[in-house]
Amino acid sequence: MRKKMKLASKILTATLGCTLALSTLAMAAPSHAAAPTVGEQKSAKLSDTNVQEIKDLLSRFQVPAGQQKELIKKVRHGTPWDVYDSNKVPVAVEHDQVIGDMNYTIKRYADGSVAAQGVERPVTVDPSAPNPMSIFNCSVTTGSGYAAYRNCQVDGVWGTVLLGAYGMDFTIINGALDTISDRGAGFQKCIFPTGCSTPTRVFYQAQEGPGAAHSRWQSDVTHGFTTWNVWVQLNVANNTYWQTNS
Image (tube, rainbow, N blue to C red; front, top):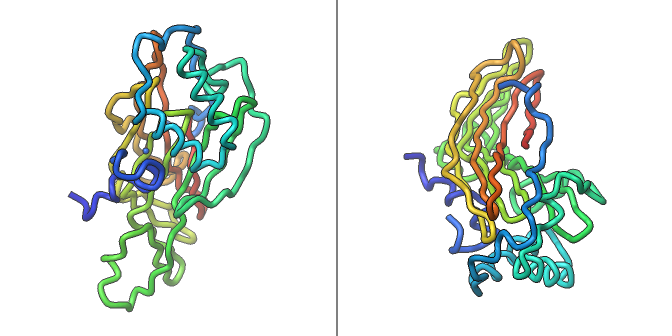
């Protein structure tokens, strides 16, 4: 098992502390779940732990306290958040938002709920340094015409749903095909009123061409009587890398 298991992902650790252990490019079109109807989530009680988890997650993405309160009230009343409604669109999109070790694109909805996709920022490592492979975070080692990335993470957030993959290795090579050498391991956390399945890797292409080298992880989410699929994907091609998600 990969050393330290990435602390079961940076986003879960940083967001909720000890409580949380988060094809081809043509398939990467954004999607929403069908909005659950009012009252679908009333059958289970919102616990104090659930409330704190929601607050921690929303605070991580700088959702104002007033909107946090209203979002929690929505959960108590069985009202879905805007982020789950396919008829709602973001009121703002923020790029290159650095939170901890991650770089996010954040979509904000009118009620304060958020969706986000993140890629871990690498630490540059001197290959001549003692034991460079012991570096804990995502790292990059560069040489003549190549850049090797190790132990990196991508993740996605949809309201109270967190999904991602950590421990991913990939290499960018000038004048040659880029590759993914380690597909990583998936993680997930769904806070009430959502639930989610253990993530699985559903698509993998180790080498660029045709299309990007990629590794996609997905999970099935439930919200009341509604079920849908979310996924995150690391792509490597054309001497760069990026993340796509559902």
